[in-house]
Image (cartoon, rainbow, N blue to C red; front, top):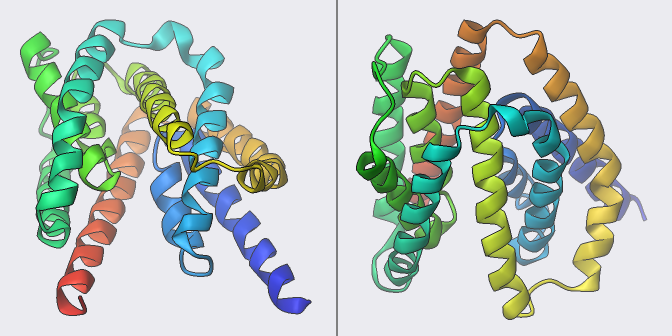
Amino acid sequence: MATPTLYMIYAIVCVFGAAIVRGFSGFGFSLLTITALSLALPPVDVIASVLVLEMAASAHLLPSVWRDIHWRSLGSLTLGQIIATPFGVWALANVPIAPMKIALGVFVLVTVAMLWRGFALKQMPGDVATSVTGAASGLLNGAFGIGGPPVVLFFLSSPAGVTAGRASLIAYFFGTDVIAMGWQLQQHLVTMDHIWKVLFFLPALVAGIWIGARGFKSADPALFRKAVLALLGFMAALTGLQGLVAVSWP
């Protein structure tokens, strides 16, 4: 009886902590939760539930950020994402994933270092460049479910500002989650067991998001930017480490 109880306590703590990060930064919930829960539970028992929780998190945050979303960028990002996702799925089936994860980790870490040192765009990228960013996100999302870094880097390096960037990230990931959920439902990968897990974790999710969102309201923009860059660097290092482990112990 003790082991399942400890698993549930561990899972609640993981969801709560990831929800605080999501409420503050606007991203990171899925990767942090799936990585943490997969240490104790089979990934097949985790992914569908986390996707539903991610959608709930976005839906909870959307009303408060609706007026701050940079809609023009969001449209071009979504267009590129939709076009490129099937190619990412093809890569998943035909290209070794471990080297791709290592390359992604290195690329993101280098970009984070540049942004940390003050690199920034003087104006918002045009529709073509924005669509290419969305395509990179779709390619990575289709290949191994990590489409966030290109879009996060896009808004962090743009002059849109932290408020508009966070709001746009929340809206963007809600759209990608809806698309992913459609595929999950079509493949009958979401069951009532997943729904019950979501209901069980919902209080921790709501409480964590509330705490994170309150933290954002009082955060200094420069501090927020550094916190998000640190989180992105951690996620990139984690992704690259996963690739190295897969190469070393296939």
